[in-house]
Length: 179
Image 1 (cartoon, rainbow, N blue to C red):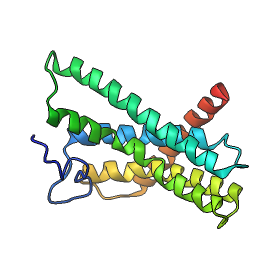
Image 2: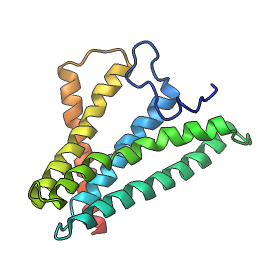
Image 3: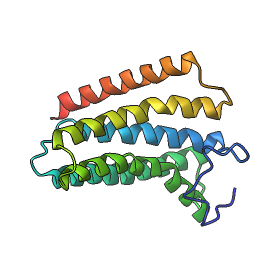
Image 4: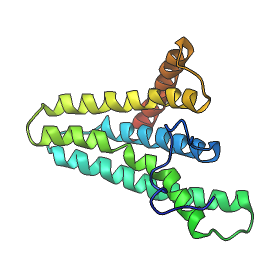
């Protein structure tokens, strides 16, 4: 699969005519969930007396996790593919597969920015950002159904709830053990 510069960062995750292949969908969904869990773990203990500090913490969490994930995936792919030296196309696809980690901080940062400029209360902004992250995590079940050409149903909703509960438990464990 040859990467075209204009298509590398815009994968066809929701396109019915050109669906994303499973080889790239799986690591993107994994990165998406991982990034959202770490952003939520960074959000929960924030003290929003200086709102911009919370934004910087989220951006730093997303950026450092992105770099660590790209590095780990590159090492893992090297093992998976043998002694093949990665070409530019492989590197760009690996970068693209990790971009969902960066996107996980975008909406929470926008919500915290609204508090920073005084549009909403800082505690309300923090709670809204946390809810958005939980909805994003649960929403991955809908994406997985889409990739499997299945229509959402009751099992999808139950699965979304279960994924959200498990992710929340992971975040609670992380926050308790690290803060």
